[in-house]
Length: 242
Image 1 (tube, rainbow, N blue to C red):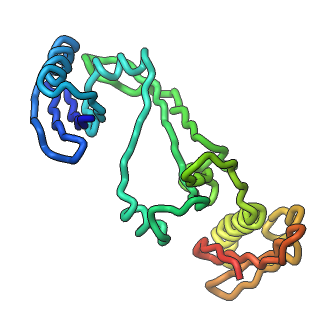
Image 2 (image 1 turned 90 degrees about the horizontal axis):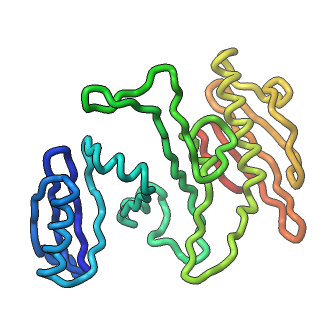
């Protein structure tokens, strides 16, 4: 298997060709039109005679490709080093079997028109945002609402997060506190004053404690067949179990 990285612009297509072992095999440049791409594919096949996995690493203003993708469909693959993800997630990487991470995959589709050979946004038409999992709020920038990815080495059913009811309720209180402080200039220790809903099933003993600059909300999660767990959230959004 060969691996090709493609850098596509209106004027040219740069191709970096690597072996399966990462050895640099070739560096090519061709015009970004259909005929040149067919010639490029035949040349690589004649010289190397191996299947090719190609990815578009950079694409700038390539209308011919954009139009074709819209007609035929497309998919996106992104490779990120486990080390970089581990540093951000503050956990061991690569994940172990059964580990769950919160991730979000979102697409923004914007209505466009072609004007003088360039794409322009159609004014007055809102972009359509779609996500792979329910967000529960009109905001894709809240990690606590992202979907779960479960890592496995073999096929295994998804295991729902047992702490989700507690986490969801605590974040409801967290955002209610932020709105309350913005309008009143203080935190509130009274759930009714915050307008927060009562805890749902399996959640008991809700509490909110405040100081001039800090707040901490907590609730007990009691599931059948398990020991009760006390979950907390504070003013910076950190959630933990004690």
